[in-house]
Image 1 (cartoon, rainbow, N blue to C red):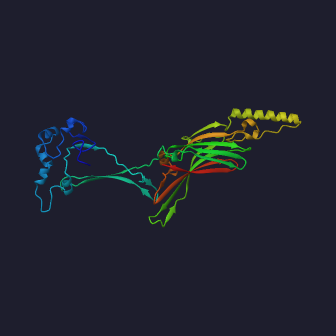
Image 2: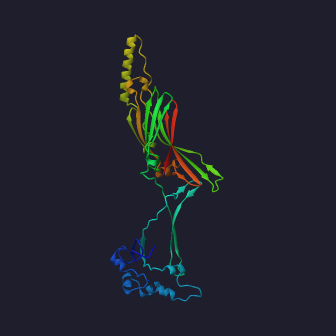
Image 3: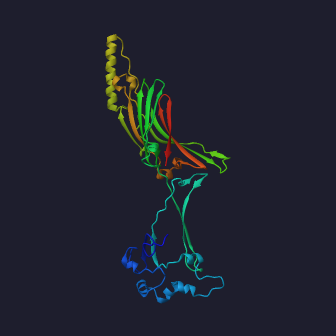
Length: 363
């Protein structure tokens, strides 16, 4: 890149010459075997590298220039001659470098009707007109990550709503942006206002993709994809499908079998006492039901209270998406030809299904 080379073979070069022990550019023993920058050769060099005088003569620039060429021909490529040259002895040369990318550049995107890819192209210019230059290309992945210190992406989202006069619920999502393959912390607080049942809690993510032509005259919007990320049903253990997710009930919730028997026994005793006072037959207990809020139908004051549940919802990982293409998600992006955005939806199923939605970013 410049004339101030740190080593004989350029900056940040680690090399190992053939027929010599492994060494680095900073090693004094290896530097003694390197060619001077003017391209001249010395006898110690040929001895250490096992090159004969004939081979050195063939490699030298003077040998290339002494050949016969027609009018207008050159012994060395014009571009190479203008820039100078360096002889590399047989061996392995490793160069490490960093390439800054502007923040506004697009990340890698691979959609059905649009894509953005990054390629690293390398050219090696060789001296001599009969030596073709070398070209290589490798596709690289560019991933955009949100700033972990940005309040815009780490600030929690809170949803508080009331369904008629039956249930009041709070949903708190700890963040607005999450990497694909990570987990989304969600906290549910369900406060019953009447004898209501909650049969299940579900979490979905929806993905919407829009395409535009260059002239903005035509657009295409794919059907919205809805992926179930988590489901907890009352009276059932967590399905193995959601084994990667985590759930923890802080207070309230479904009672255990022992707690349910004790609660029904207390409720039966209370009804017997009330019936004896009124000289009537005791009212029968309601049939056992499964509800995430517990047995509110028993009418015990101690069972009335909020149910708080914390869930770490697993976003599909790369391995999960490879096994099941229906789980495939794409990162959020917004540019002139493609828009990809996501919504996180939570469903509380009781007598009627309640759905709360909020926008989220997947990276």
